[in-house]
Length: 125
Image (cartoon, rainbow, N blue to C red):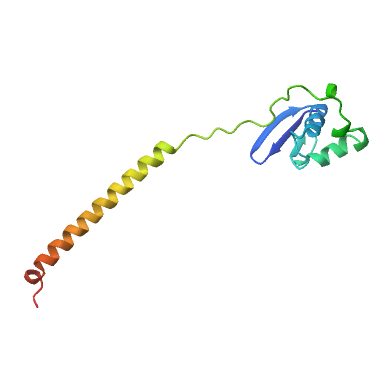
């Protein structure tokens, strides 16, 4: 049986039932992660899938595990999410926005200055 795991937007697998049990006991996978394998109608909580697949007494309790039963190096389960850096674009937008604001303030200030100096010539009263 090949089991697929999903947590949030991250997915991983396929894993064997034994691998899933090992990762659960190590805390790499969580009981509320969702799991799916061929034959299921929909994703279900991993805890529910495991309880249907194996009786709970067959699962090793983490406190009962020996050093030999703990793998020395766990395989990565969830893919690392790489997000592109937007710092350069953000700084550029800030500089452009500030320049536009200064330009608008300058134009408004110039218009106000012109109006205040020449208001008697412009207004008929």
